[in-house]
Image (cartoon, rainbow, N blue to C red; front, side, top):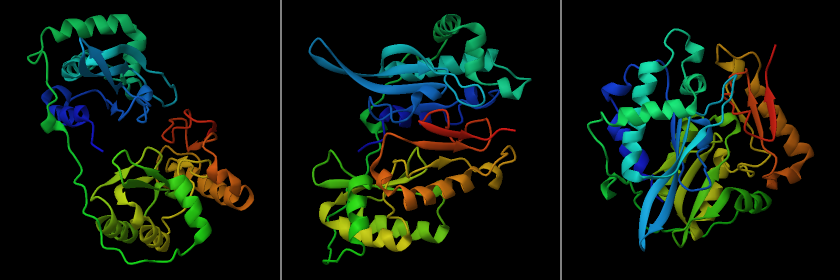
Length: 326
């Protein structure tokens, strides 16, 4: 597995770049790792979905590009603007979009200071015309994404493991079915960790880091549904890893299932929250586990909760949504 080179290169290019230091408000960019759009690019200011096409018998890398999405009280679906954009044109196009947003974006009204409102006012065609004109003035007309821009995860050596008995047979079987998938790298597995409301205590996190160091790659990812992902785990290491996670309370099955509810902080910590979205999520997960335990395998019904209309819990995306209102 590798971080998409485009995201790494873009991060390095725009970090502390003067062009994006004084924007009217935030500008969100998402790179998906596959054509399945696992990054929800359609709700971001700019979204890139990797694609490969064959031209003259040669493989060419690029991205499908979407522009001007967003959630909040007024959700907007991103506009598809390129079915295929060559990878060396991704950063120039992004820079031109940032320059136009910087120049014409809202400065006085904070709630309107997002790219989606600017595009809504100008129209997508007019915005893209301005971007096209702006690109002519850019110093860098192309920025190549080289192999050095890919950050690869070091593959861990095979651990020396003593045979262990499974601490909870039923939970282990459910965990294997719902929280584990085989990587494309032969012999390795990735483990997804379900975190209720996305919370983890500091001591637990340190113990998790020790487990990852012992059985997996030294790399822990935060997932889009408030969980965690560890990878490059040998098959025969799954049982001791499960036992270790189970002791920490991190082996709950049902990752990304109906059992796995996403919720924003709500009134617990957010000044804008008007309802306890985290409290509702905890109570719903408890009720589902007690009364509808078969839903641990259900991936068709997803639940998301926002403590106000601003959609930080992504309630506008899924099948069953709760949004607090007055």
